[in-house]
Image 1 (cartoon, one colour):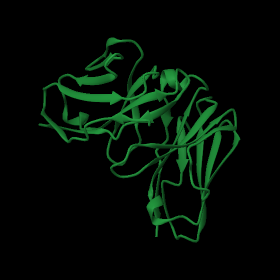
Image 2: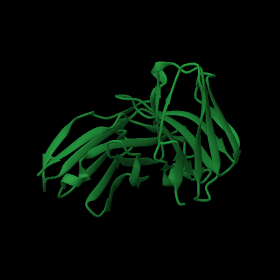
Image 3: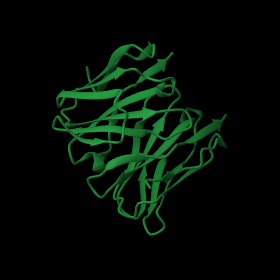
Image 4: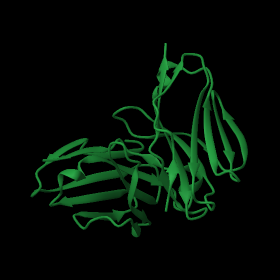
Length: 112
Length: 115
């Protein structure tokens, strides 16, 4: 059973705080992990990808991967109201050449 | 035009109608995908094409018929749809074999309503 689990939220944080988004997956063979941002009524937009255990930082975003625990997270530092969106976790299914399977997404609301 | 373009943006059709969704990518990619996004459900992978060849049909009902005439264009032909088929249909593209490394680029989607 292909499963990518995310807390649907909504997750509400004040402006300037750190938002923490979590994702678990069931396929131990998954090799690549992605975070997409989707604004209401818009299409998903890739914001981060990570392949190796540990942290990967890009500006205010940090992706964290723990393959042993089958867990990937996204931290957003200094959250802004413009970060309010649904964040989709996606993992490859069926090895390194697999297709992307998505979670339901976590809705983030950043309050001014 | 750049990126992945989908037309139409919105479509309302009756259950007996036949319509088609179009997707065009200008990224030089050679893998294209159809996804369905319904409320409160994850994106569902429908079809995958690599170099114009269908490599995956994710148990999609036959009332959805994909067509990929070349690596830049992808169609989804619709007929005899049901109201539960109302959803956002997203097209995506990637370099073959590299989508799993660099992710997919999505089009803006077609919002389909079946009445």
